[in-house]
Structure formats: structure tokens, C-alpha cells
Length: 489
Ligand code: G6P
Image 1: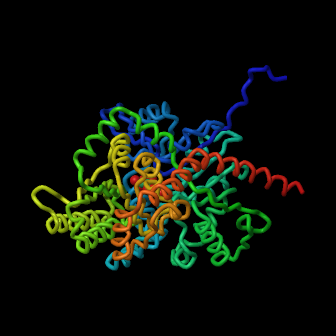
Image 2: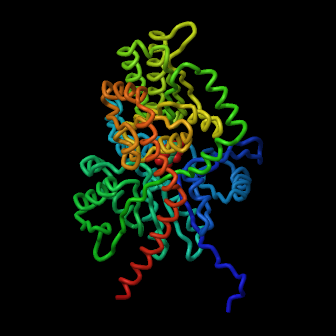
């Protein structure tokens, strides 16, 4: 019998994502500095108490030599991370090409620019081949580290082939796959030359998860319409085998943000920001500099607001943090110049010697600086053209316990389904509507602001990242048990 203090051995969770939660920079032959990213997924999984999580993914760096690969593997092991080494050519074809130039815009309903359309069509096959090859490389690393009983949780559009690669190797592996982006309408998905192969590969998983019911429904209808399979309330059925499909809306580690506001450095920053912008309302945008975020549209709406409301011209400021991302992809380079041009024009138009209407930064902010900024913001502007969820809206709400500012939120962000009742929802393509919503937010009564904030704050603090991860993993365990029972019957 068990001794009284014997603890059950924790189930191991292998989290497989394109990018590891730490990014590596080479300092010398065998020396590495590791930057821990504090993204939602990382804090969500650190908080999952019942499991012992290990990460498998790309460290964001090219390491061509064996000795470098060995030393990086060793350094990462201390962080419970296992690297997948991708060479430059694979990164170019798989990550920049198929993932970020094809799947990413397609899943966000953004077509390719006219001049790229033909070129992309031509390079499609080689990029798709690289995508499959890269997925197999991830699978090889998983197989090498897998122990019986482990749970394997695959993430995002980079790894749609992974469930199939894993199950082919070991059909009894427990495999889940979660998509962090929207899954588009089947009418969009069916334009992809590799539409069927991708769907079939994902269906090899035991459990397939999305942020919203709409995305799950789109996926199921793509499977029924393109593959001719049967969609049931539980998922997709193929010859008696069920792939469970469900919605698992992600959240944030809200306590981490709330606690940060008490840190003396953050309080100093808050005080300084308040002084700097005294007499003006602060509007804030925080986005990766990505087409899907609708940054040009947001800035044009702000311009329209200033144009139509001269009273506000020297009483409001827009702070836009634009975090550089995927800078090797030409589309992202074009976007950067476009945003700079618009910001420059508007500042030239409305600025004075003592006042600039838009402060635009091309960089990320350190966690505590970001919390201070959220805390002094009167109105947050999230105008994504499409967004899987958008956690900036959650982070803003978590930091607004004192101020109870207003959230203007795109109806095309997954978050609109959870924070819709507390936010002002807008169609980001309609600049006139967004400009009007800025006026509405700046003039909103305290009572209305408090009521809306209360709704959002309750949601953000009661639907955390940790609960998201725990729900997904326990559902995956249950799904596998149910499938075994079905087979026995
Ligand atoms: C989105 C994706 C993530 C990705 C992140 C940053 O949130 O869903 O999978 O890691 O963007 O993009 P990057 O290309 O830098 O990993």
C-alpha cells in the first residue's frame, strides 16, 4: 500500500509550439543568453499545477554547428525546454513562407496583395513541402522525448501536420491540437490548394480546440464540406473514429497584472506618466506590427476624430506601441513604412511645438512599464481586422481596477465574444464609426464606465489562462478514456 506521504507522480505534458517560451541569443562559441518570454501561453502553463510541463519548439536562432546545438540544448534543459533546430532555408520556406505569408493572412481573411498573388501561387508547392518537412522535424523531437502516458499538446497554425505525424508513429499517444488564430469560414479554407491534407492531418488528434464556437463550427463545416465527413455535436466522425472539437477561450494570468500595480517601480512610472500627460486623456494601442491588427485603420480613425472635434485636439493623446514582428516578410516591411507615413502626416497636421497627438514606438515594452501604461490609460483601442482572441484587451482590463477606463474593441477579435457587453464594439473597417466611438468613450459617464468595467473585470479575473490550460488538458484525458471505452464496446 502507499505510504501516507507518497504523492502521485505528475502526468507529463509536452507542449509543442513553433516558438519556445525562451528565445536564445548566442554570446560566444558555447555561451547563450536566454530571454524568457512572458506571453499568455507561458504563464498559463506555468500555472498548471497537476502537470509537469516541458516545451518543445524553435529557439528563434540558427545554430548550424553541432557544438552550438549541444550547448544550447543543455542551456535550454534548465528551463525545461527542448529545441528543434531549423536551418535558414526551412525557416524561409516554412516559417516566413507557408506559415506567415500563406496560412496567417488566409486564416485572418486578408487576401494576398495583387503583386504577390502569382508569385505565391508558384512557390506554394515548395513551401508546403517545407511545411510538412518542418512538422516532421518537430515530430521527431517529440518522439525522442515521449514517455508512455505523456500528454502531447500541439499549438497553432504552424503545426497542423504534427498530430498526423505523431499518430502515425504511435497511435496510442494522447494528442491535442489548439489553434490560436481564427479558423476561417469553409469558403475561405477551401481556396487553399492543400485544404484536404491539412484538415485530415489535424483530425488525427484526439481533441481539437479553438478560442470560440464560431471557429470550431467553421472547422467542422470545412471537414463536412471538403472531406465529406460527418459533423456531430461532439466533433467530426470518420469511420467510427471521433475527433472531439470544442471551444476553449484562453485567458490571462490576471493576478500577475493586478499584483504588478503594487510594485514601487510601477507606481513611480504611473505617477510620472500622469504628470507627463496631465490635462490630456490618454488613448492606448498595443499591438504586434501586423496587418491583422488594423493599426493604419485605427490611426486614420483617430485622425478623423481630431478633424471633427477641434475641442479635443490638444486634450487627447494616442500612444501606440507597435512591436516589430516577422520583419523578414516583405508584407510586414511595407506595413511598417505605411504606418510611419500616416503617423508623420497626422503629427505634422495637428501637432504644435508643445504637443504631439500621436506617440508611436516601434518596440516592445518591459512587463512593468506596460502595466503602468495600461493603468494610466483612459481609452484602449483594439481595432484588429481579425484576431484569434486578443489578450491586450484582457491585460488592459486587469490593470484598470482604479481608473475604470473604456475599451473600444473590434467585433472581429475573439475577445468580442467575452468582453462585448463591457466594451464599445466597432467595425474597424468603418473609420467613421470608430471615430464616433472615440467620442463616445471620452464623454462616457462615470456610472456607465464603472458598470462596463465591472463586467469585463469579472470576466478577465474569472476566466484565467490557468483554467484554460487545465480545462483543455482534462478534456483531452477524458476524450481518450471515452474513445477507449467505445472501442471496448
Ligand atoms: C501569434 C501566433 C503565435 C505566435 C505569435 C508571435 O500570436 O498565434 O503562435 O508565436 O503570434 O509571432 P511569431 O511569428 O513571432 O512567433
